[in-house]
Length: 314
Image (cartoon, rainbow, N blue to C red; front, side):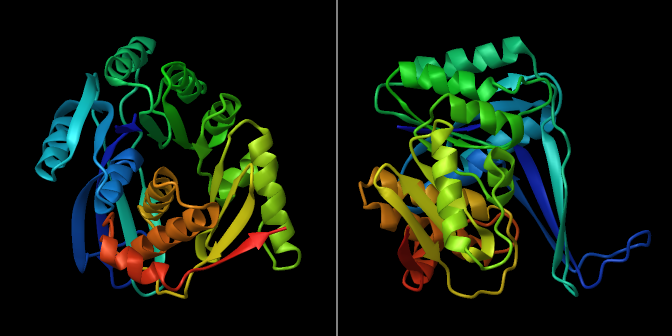
């Protein structure tokens, strides 16, 4: 079984404005609300590939109850631990005239050590050898930086596989716990190993060095999201770069989660490394063409997949 873990889920609202004027009254041309959180998005994306998962994490208050009910209505299996406070509600504002996207995120509830202990106990009650735990998103207020690292260690002791997608100190601590796969983006790669991806001169070498540098921190595999450049994958066999077709981006919200889910599906299918990179980029690119936190269909991902090009990195 696959467990997606979102310790700070959200209800996301996306609003489009013909032209955004800061400090003035703005009327949205259209809006939508989505039940979200990075792990939630991964569960939805995995379902597009026919993979069942259990969506877990922490929820709080009225928004938390609405979130869980909405996820169940979507057909997801949920097992959240309730804590004090209120689940966050996030807003994404899109200026249609300029194409600029602005995200406004609430902090969510402040959790305690006992909240984390209760969640870990609930997870380990279910976990069996061979299960996969995908830990996604920023830690909630009150959680120590090594919260994911502790979960990774617990999962591995039970014979499970651990996948991590977070940032900052939580990512650094998580890498040291030797997860089976991590999915940083360019900003997070910069935080981890000082990687830079501006300019084309020596880009392949810099991507390769970044992948290997992150692997030396502890992860067995690295799936690196490179935005409009595509994505790269490295394991003990080598490194590969997958380049996407040109698209008109509508919203990048959820693209990284679909990138991870598609790559994870390919890995679990036992596909070769270059196909893991190719499927990941197809998923992320297809998601960037959707509005709000809309996860693309399998057909939409496959359409992009046919145009993704992969090559090995030296």
